[in-house]
Amino acid sequence: MVQDYEGRCNCGAIRFRVKGALSGIVGCHCSQCRRQTGLYYAATNVDRDRLEIEGGENVSWYRSSDKARRGFCRTCGSALFWEADGADYLSVMAGAFDQPTGLRFGYHIYCADKADYYEVADNAPRFSAGRTSGVAGD
Image 1 (cartoon, rainbow, N blue to C red):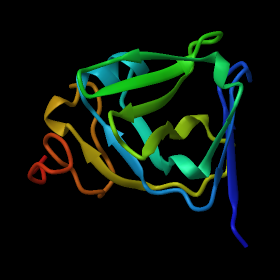
Image 2 (image 1 turned 135 degrees about the vertical axis):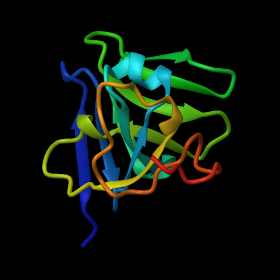
Image 3 (image 1 turned 180 degrees about the vertical axis):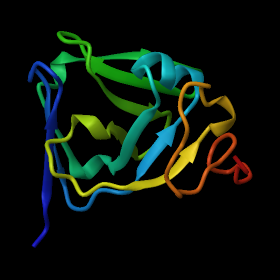
């Protein structure tokens, strides 16, 4: 049996459903993600054809870099999505999913930019920049 996963923004104006398995969480420690969330970005990548969004008219998008954009709820401000230009997937914030998810960290990126007020405590692989960079030693 294929499991569906559901989630929403904080106010419920945006709801979403993912059909099928979720991938491991990507922890992004870059300065943009820290500024948006207050800690780091924890998301799972979902193929577009498996993601249904209800209330999509309430998603506001902004260009966060020359390579990507971020989606959030225009009513409550919940950060929900990250999308690389030309990608066939969206990153969906792990905290927006209804529990239980069974999610675990798959890897961490931009660890060289990690803030000084927390430690990465799991044993998932760490990359100093994007996933194509070398594995970080810290």
